[in-house]
Length: 169
Picture 1 (spheres, rainbow, N blue to C red):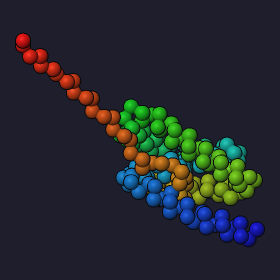
Picture 2 (picture 1 turned 90 degrees about the vertical axis):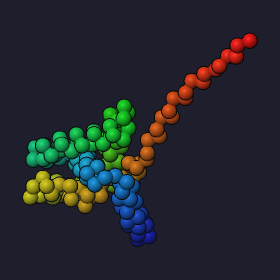
Picture 3 (picture 1 turned 45 degrees about the horizontal axis):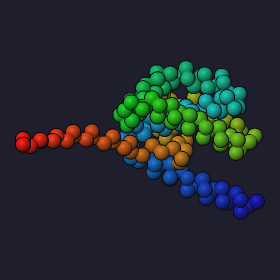
Picture 4 (picture 1 turned 180 degrees about the vertical axis):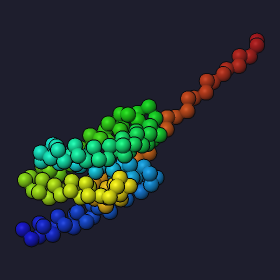
């Protein structure tokens, strides 16, 4: 049992730098937007899985203008990165965040709510919304499986039409 716990601790320590490293390609504002979105998603998973809907609603009310601004920033980032596929990729991203949080809940079982429930008290005790980005970054909630730094392949330029010159006979 001790060996299993040690292995899990090592995996956790290795995953955190990997998750942070996979966000390094992003600009600071984009990275912050992703981290705040991951925090919101984690709180949503906790609200639904642990029956903390009232705490989640209080979080949304307290930070609503900032969360709405953050969501617009994420939408803009996905439009810049993916063009016409921006909304589709944004939806995929949101689903992956929620699934990662939910999967963590399944892995931890009944410990999930106990281990993570204090995050509501922590986030609600922040002095202002200005503290939210640093708080979100410190929680390291972006799953290492999220691939935010993959570049979108540019569509090849259309081929020029070949012109043929017919020789006069």
